[in-house]
Length: 353
Image: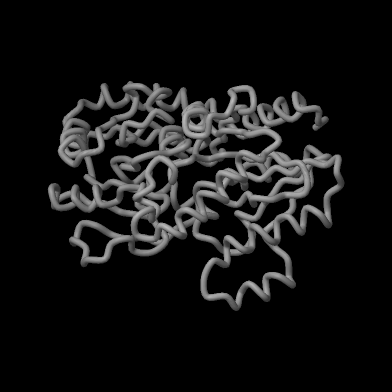
């Protein structure tokens, strides 16, 4: 039996509607009715230890992962079973059964200062020690992009044959609502959605809102990531359903995505599949695929402002050509293809699915 961890979509978590939550939800929906040899289990839950850990002031998530995961594995899995843990940050440093880790990114190892290496060095070292152990002790590793596989080889010295690449899919709502969005009557409204941690580089959007005061920038995020008061043209909107997200994107001039690093970049692929222009930081996880069918900039604000101005000045025909090209690339990333790739990996490891 194969057990797939669904901790990311159990209970309310801000990331349920993005990132790891989207990945787990996609596999869960695509596999649960078709593959009886895969069972879905929230390894993070254990009623007894949850009650004990809830009284602690700090470190609750780390303890839950490193206590609940191995206990549930020991109680519910046999030695012949395999667990699939879809987030390297959840993988415990000790797991009593064979497991496969899906690595979404190793960004905290690449940008240590963004994750408290200086401000909270003890917590940073503990978290990275546990994360590294969880990855290195995996029976096999799945990277969600070639860029992540390259990072694993570079930073951890892992052999290439221990890592397989399985690209996630895009939910059908983005593919089925495709229409080319290249109007010359621009609203000058741009959308960002996703996380708010430092590597998302949302300060760049704040800077753009000051450079372009007549534009509107809407951030669909869990909470206000800025400490200071916001300019009138920058709004914080609550996370919403995919149906509402599609409407927000359709009523905008495009997605603006300034993240410093991504393992995959769901918003980029989803917006491209929908026919919405993408203006994003130039990252290998998606720029190597989309090429010049999306608008990319360097990390600095001047490059971002220049790219935004260039985008607005381009003709409708140029935009249309780029959007159609980006759509053709994005629509290849279906959950059917993702599940087929995962099955191929599992079969190569000796598991019939």
